[in-house]
Image 1 (spheres, one colour):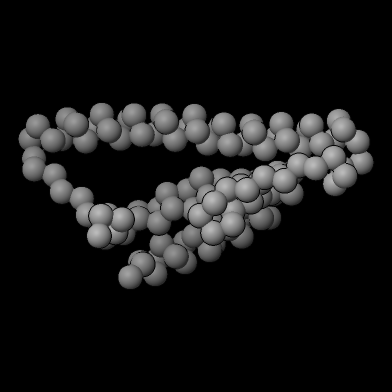
Image 2: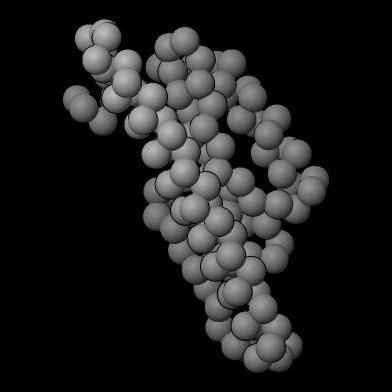
Length: 115
């Protein structure tokens, strides 16, 4: 069962993202749970989530000009690549700390995907 505090916080974050028309990759954590949220569909993006699948739509007929289509796609790619860069940095830093702790403690983490 999800942590209701994390669910509530995620909903508040969604409101802020919408208000500012921005995307986000957010990981929230409590003492017992982790909640992940990916917002990839601000007005200037041609990406959206359909369930757990990332979708893109960039058809020329949906834009006034080819240049507008190109800009929309470039902005979307910039958002996604920025998330990859930030995520990679976070993963590297987190793994480094966990590897150091592993030498002093027996670590265990249960993930619902392990079931």
